[in-house]
Amino acid sequence: MTFTGPAAGASTASSPGTVLQNVAGAADNVYYIKNQHSGKCMTVHGASTAKGARIDQYRCISGAQNQWWVVYKLHVGGLVRVTGYQSGKCLSILGGSKRKGAPLVQWTCNGASDQLFAGHLAFGGKTAIKSYHSGKCLDVQGGSTSNNAPIIQWSCNGRTNQKWYLTG
Image (cartoon, rainbow, N blue to C red; front, side, top):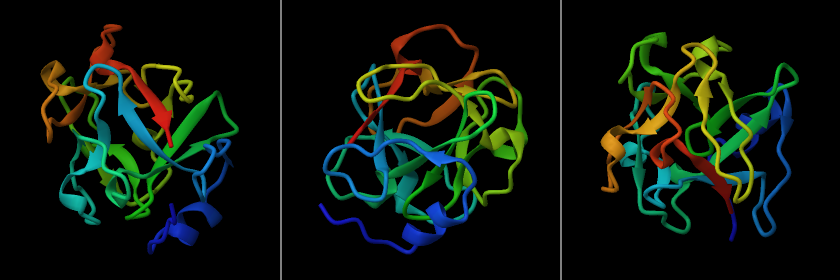
């Protein structure tokens, strides 16, 4: 599979931290982030490159650049920053909110704490992804298995709709 896109060089070259080890066969350290409960991929809704576009889940589609993510392991406290391959924007909690139910969106990377996450993302190793800013976990709203179900932050509860893993 060949990975091309406007964010290919920009999202990796200017980002602090270390890019996690590449999946066999994947280029540019690009991954899908899959939900354990639904088996669906984290997706930028409508393949938007706009600031504020919502993040939801959708069936994993080979070659869909709006489902490709670059995960940076930062050199501080096991935190990661996740950048959309297609847009070059960071996963963020809308408005830096700490409330339950606040949506996950893509936003211009600015180093804010709502763009930092804790979680041991690994291949096949399912883990919660916790917002460093709010202490809440990324959650498929209502435990839905439907396409376009929004990804929100919610109190961490250990359920499978809050478990994520990387795949290539």
